[in-house]
Image (cartoon, rainbow, N blue to C red; front, side, top):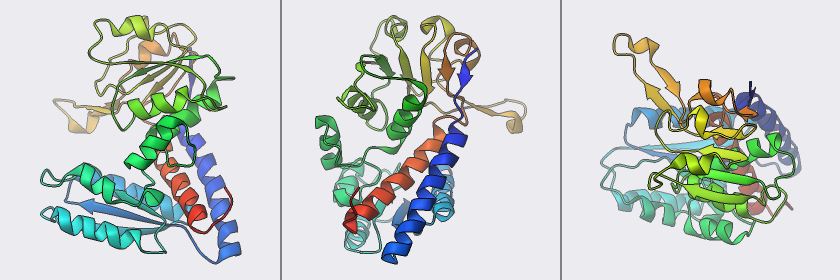
Length: 297
């Protein structure tokens, strides 16, 4: 039976380290890191995520500036707010909660954020630096959380075969680029596969490390995983109970019951990758604070 990777406890450990450093920096500088979060509209899931981010900031001593805008807010007004926040010295990180209403171009909004405040790691400048292996950038939070988990459960990544199922700009592409780099936290052989593959299992069975962000429950079954692999399940899918909504449950993209019998270690859903995502947002905000205050990283 696989080791269950407890993302919640790892996130708590990392947050304690962040809180300690924030307190030390406050003593030295008299300042606290600041994160501005912008929510446009009333998407219920986005509202929950924004509340969670605000609570996480409070937990570690980061100041949270929350800006809630009406659904009909124009793109120009949103970009104007971002430019104001770009110039605000008390704001070290800016996050625009996605998705945005359909009348707003997400790329234009992301491009308006100062790359040095882009703690989500989506600005083309940060993406470009990530691809070429320049570590002086912000990495997207979910891939960064996945990398943290992998490094805790795989000794000596050099030459390990990582198979990434999924090619999104949020998880698949960034993590593949991060894990192929020649450094101690990566240096893997990386394969990306996706729905265009006639037989995804052909690729996944080769993986020493299997990361799944396919967006579909039960994409990976037990017979698709090599014995002893480390499996990171990024998927979050709600399975509704037709007779009792209270009994609906969250599951990943991996069939946990089957794969946990084959893998050496596996993340559960919930409680695996999820807690690391917001934690890495806090870490990126702290990194931005140190940059803006010329504190050596």
